Image (cartoon, rainbow, N blue to C red; front, side):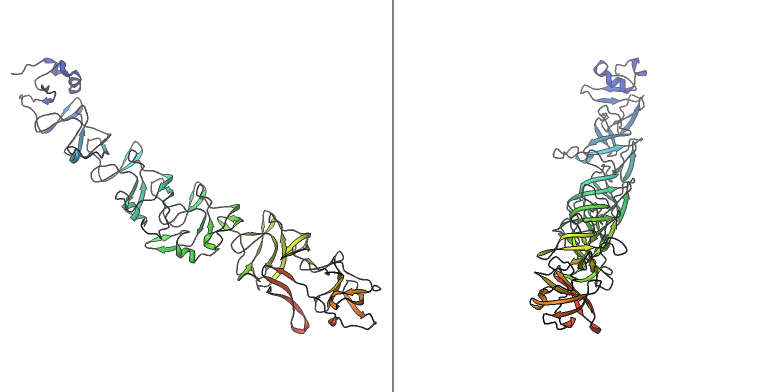
Length: 518
């Protein structure tokens, strides 16, 4: 018969454990043996084995030898702590039950034990307001995680909580067993050189933790963003056309198909990678590779990510820049006019504005800051020379180069026409002839004899109409000379790789003509 004490009737197991060596045995209760291991005896003085025993509101497990277990798994579903009590509503980081006896196994995982002490397995569980995921063995999941077609991010191995909002992450690795499901779910193949996914980037996770990966724009905190099929936020220049890649919609700058089919109307600018939202307003940036402008830095103006630009169907001209047609549009922004080409690059200097017929409707000048100028503008560059121009200051043609007389000077499409040395005759229409000096000043003296460059310096006298046009001409012998025999020069303007001039058409009339420069 074991020595007993009446204290057992009032002491809980926890208190007994705390007392340790001060008490070594008792009946119908707990007893610590000489090895320091606790056992439990029932009222028949039999050692309890292979079952749970509740004491003081806590559960303890006695193994097949009747030894109370501590810091170990029980039946691969429960866990008892250092004091032997079953873990309830708490976390534990440990190795699996199968690996407890394997000295080479040191990989620990987090487990969560619920209100009944059983580990959580297969699925999600909310703990203290945060959502966690567990595999079939109860291991808390971390990092990239896929559930059917939905993709989540669960923090690092000591976190595990499902994330929401913006995260800068490495892309899921198809070659990593832990990330393969997530990589497959977004169609990301790390070994595929054509895969448009960056090695790392910004991802957005909704309030439900689901990664946004549809190939379209998403409004986040009042701003719009684009995402490719892999879920990465797209930035800088992107092609807004959806193409198909496997089963996923694809929207990306690096996709060869998207590049080949890129249209300026579908290209967007989404700011730098640190921002990524749809651009609005003025930006001085490198151009879009997908539009062949990656080596150029220019000013652009964006509205909802789209660059203001010339429309090919409406703003084409017959001018050529190398082998490419020239497209220009005059666009009003905040009360001021600016000029843009077909891909949205702001233009400066002398620019042709086209009409729907493809012919140049007028020439305009935009200063170094892009503002359209009106009135007199000096030193306008034209090929290897510079000239004075004059542009309309009012009415519907505001800013357009004038043709005709202005303040006693002759202009054609804005350009002031001048003689090279002394005097020169210009023809600007079917029956319209003018005489100007080397400053472009229109002549009107009927008594003066003029040495005319067009006629190899021959001296001539003229009669003029009130509008400065030549009425008649006589040579130095007093013979009348037909105006058509004056070798009048047709005005021209060299712009890009083209020459804008006049050509004779039906009924001896003249029309604007454009031809390639020599």
